[in-house]
Length: 394
Image (tube, rainbow, N blue to C red; front, side, top):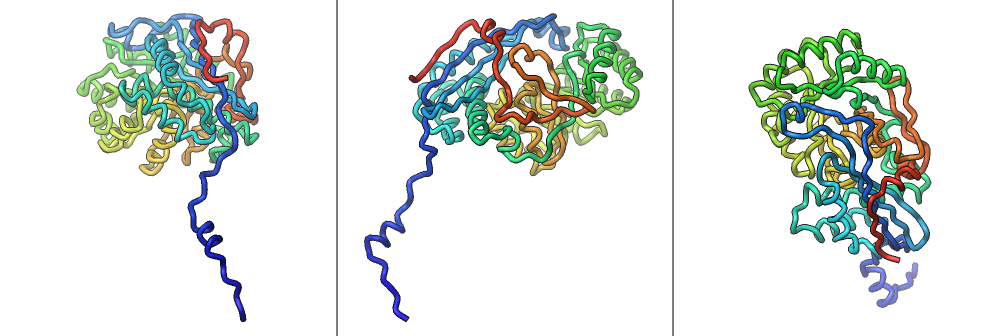
């Protein structure tokens, strides 16, 4: 049987590396918005009672809205509490030009280019939190272009996650006020209740926890010390709290005390939870490397966006760690739905004035929206709360 020889030129062309695939689209313009959202009432956790911080009165938001040459749009956000909002906004303004003209599908490439553009101030902290807003917007755009909720684009394991409320459990509220708010949350379909502890008088912590456990019966119940115990006090308190059948004890130690958290997680039956204050994958991996066996609580806006969140989530799943992302349920519901084991999502209603849509909650679960992308559009109130904007590109 005769065969036709391949011409040398054609063979060379076939062997040559092909150009990278492209959507044919480019980022045309990006608008940043610096938004100050007042809270209805100031709230205090243990950091206030120990004199380390002032009561929280507002959340400062950094929004990114981007448009491509093909007319596609994406929206993302980051946030700060008490300090850092102006710094996030200023940092992103300095490096944003790098993103203009890039293919919006090259999310990891864009993320790295912005991190290196601002690397002189480090690749954690304010730098990552600023870039996070753009990273989230790029994922929102990608899912909108596909016509899918973000969770479905990433590959969901479930359509809903367990949900618990935190906003009703702060320390400035009396036990009776917390009971009333807990009842309202449960009646609204929320499954678990978290309250703050870590006061200078540990006996008062136990009094409040006892009262709330009696009020909740055997329902899911968590406590959060907001990093206010040293190692000795943390061990004593974890021992005292074992009898309350808690879902977890959160941040008993300084957020950077990886060894201390790892020790507690291997010592007590009640799970330990931490991670919300960490601002890079490397900081989170410090917990894993120390032998931590508790619940990890990465925060996508703090860790640097969805790109690094997914990197760490893959590693956390490999180590069989449970997940309970911190705050920003509008983003974290999608990410939690992609985790192999069912996580908890934290419910805060504080950001509701900024978004037109509401998330479905019932029977102790919070449900992934069926709308494309994150599934949220910005309100006129968000525009009225904007104190500064900057636009890049056409």
